View 1 (cartoon, one colour):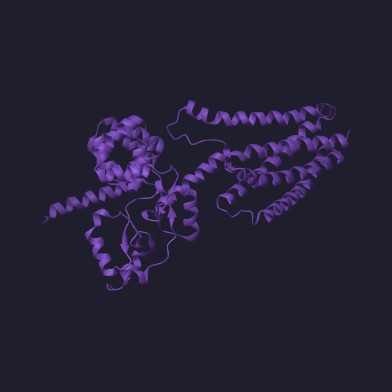
View 2 (cartoon, helix red, strand yellow):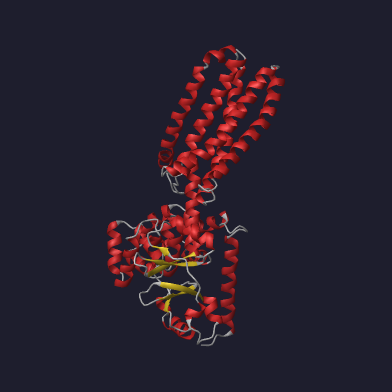
Length: 474
């Protein structure tokens, strides 16, 4: 087929226009520009279908997913009409799960089936899991038997297991094959292979993985070279393994992909590094939110949703605050005699709380990355004790000097200095011992530690300062 000059000019202009729109859509940090979002909204308000399609087509699927996160539900539904099934598949897999559940309700089952056929089995299973039961049954019934079985098998594994994370499409070859036979097979069976793969897994007659040949090594080897001569050892992942364990293995051994085996040792799928990036982000976000005592609510969350997600944690903190207040109440007589105590005691508790949070954050991260274990636990505890004493001593001198100058009372400066040393030492110990203890008891230290550490620093801070004041000043 030939093109005349006019066709080529129009094609070039269209291509340049799409490039210009993409440049306009994204900032230097690859975030969507607010002005571009406004352009989409204005086109939707005008009912300008041509402009709306042009704006959407200029974006990549991940950017369209980001765009939908900034739009209200009504605009998201309107955009769906302009998205082709092959693009819809990638967009749905990139959407925030809160928004995805809402969008999936509006996509027709037939369009969903076409979209799912474009995805690898792991991504398809994630989408199907988010469907309402009736719609899930309807979509699965309309799929081919092979695709339906693949998705149902994936969904049968635990939610955060390697079996759920893996894709069932995998390139495997018997150990007696040569490089040439393998390359010819890849070309003949391209439709049945994953869209993206990095290794060819070499298997024995029972389909157990013996090793892997990286695609780069395969392409550089002579056609008559047997695979078993160029294969490399593999790190096997079992289907029951937790996704955090999988992420740790990928990080430790710098893996790009890894075979997944069933309890019998047979190769049933693979996990690739793009899946692990998602897991690492998900687990990091969970730990970060857990340390603050909140849960992810999504951009569309209502005031009531956010309120409920934070209420119980605040209720627990209210209980610990009452406990700290009871310590203050026990020294109410001393406070009434020396008003300066009421002025100064929040300083000790606040410094202890911040020091405890610092130690706690480092400890939780070390536990998550396995940098902290029984092997180096005692050394780490002694290090935190030393840090607490050194920081306590340094700030005791600073605060003691300020208080002495402020209230013209050297003994009061001595009291707050001693309390500062005691509380920063307690903060360091609590920050390391609380998460270690909770992990030993089987609890997630990221979720439970903060409330215990702040309780320790508040109670110890108030008690040490007021107790020392009673002994020394009154």
